[in-house]
Length: 252
Length: 66
Image (cartoon, rainbow over the protein chains, first blue to last red):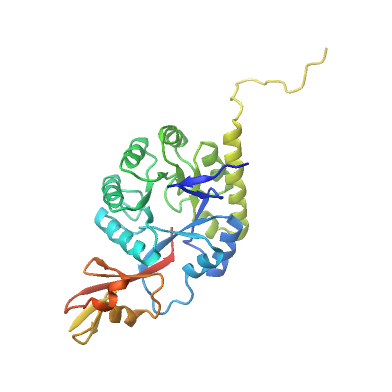
């Protein structure tokens, strides 16, 4: 079935966006990325480490996976804009996963700084993919600001708690004119399938794969779950009923 | 003069460029970006942009994340 995932005019064959954080080694990451089928993968920007051996960029280049730099670790709009500009220069892409977090305990997005940063980056020519709260109003404001997608959280980053407010995710999907990517909170394959069944256009996850007992196998599970959830969404589920509906004819 | 590169003080000669500063901390220019006092310096201008006493130079690259 021809069902491309399109962000800012760019079509991708996979609706699963992988993050690279948390993998125990570049080799494990490489095998997990391959098993996931992802075509877009996040990286963070940090000071160069003269002692570092091997680079995540080499792994992505060898696999032909597009790089999506993030602004992880930024607490203010000014920080995030500075990091995004460095990322654009280093990675030669104007795509950015915009993250502006409020505090280290929850890693929840700071909505005021996030919207401010989105405005500034859109004006500066970036293709902005904001990691946002599961707040339909904020998602709408980010879309109005010119973001190329909205990426609401299912639960806090790395928590594996799944989708805590599916109703809000549905409201965001219903109203959005840009792709909706469920970002953060995925714990296992069923969470990814549910995100897609709710109508999300894609899923972004890292921890649930990179910190799984077997990252490569979990990546394969996530790939299948995203496909299954998407197909179920397109197929249209049966209505929930309180009582049984016989699926075999009654005996005469 | 003293220039801070990625948080560490370096004693440098007067005619040092951004490119010289970058090469003190990394051998690869690919996947790397530099900022002086918070402003990005494009790669094409590294070798023609001087650094001054007291400048804060940040040299960053991609790492696993997100």
